[in-house]
Amino acid sequence: MISLTDTQKIGMGLTGFGVFFLFFGMILFFDKALLAIGNVLFVAGLAFVIGLERTFRFFFQKHKMKATGFFLGGVFVVLIGWPLIGMIFEIYGFFLLFRGFFPVVVGFIRRVPILGSLLNLPGIRSFVDKVGESNNMV
Image (cartoon, rainbow, N blue to C red; front, side, top):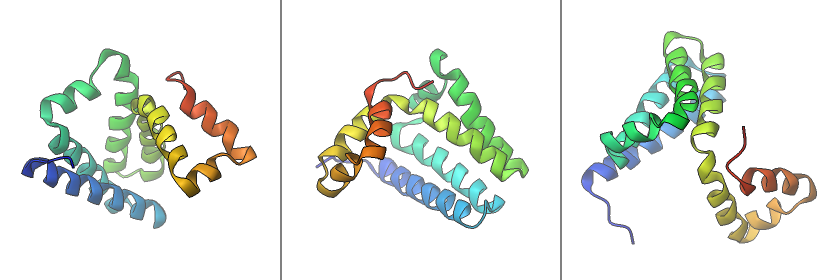
């Protein structure tokens, strides 16, 4: 089992609450307050889990500046009060930032018994193959 420090445990909690508030905010027709709280908790949780320096290095790598701009710009747009536009920016930035992890996630999900068979359905399989094949999603 993976051992986590107390700071990383706090970060996991913050990230989990952030994802919950983001999801709940979208369910409630893009509620500004819930989305803003979710954004702040998610970014703070990420910083607690991997550390401030590694978080800064992850977001501000030269080849990820476009993705970081969209993601953090979307957070800012949500915070100033335009939740739908901000979430569109955030989702685009999120996919650009984390596209390198998608092949790993798709490979893992394909090994899960029920979810793996769902990913092999005709309409879904071609989309999942494109997402999981390489890092060039742009």
